[in-house]
Length: 144
Image (cartoon, rainbow, N blue to C red):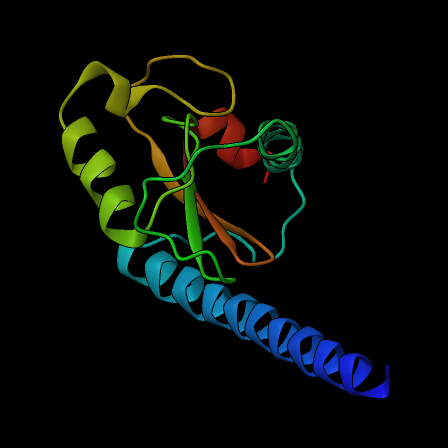
């Protein structure tokens, strides 16, 4: 019995270590992505838009949010993009969605209010091991 407990503890500790590493990686990834995109929002800003998106992500995850297939079963950084919320993605697949959207009408749709505008401000949020990509209009960005 003690042997099983010891093994289970080791497995549990290893999983917890992987989860903590995934969260730390997500923090670094989000900071780098925000820097590259020129995102100037306040870190950790709890805007109504971000809170709503987090609730949507949580609801989707509760009912089995599919992945792109490149994410490992162990804890890892996942990307969830607000303009294509149908799945959790690896970084490469998230970038592919971004690239496919560039220059389209959808590229100018605010993820906060849904309006199509001339200028969208790129945004990055991070929740645990998940990096969230979003784009906001002037009005929604002002509310950050």
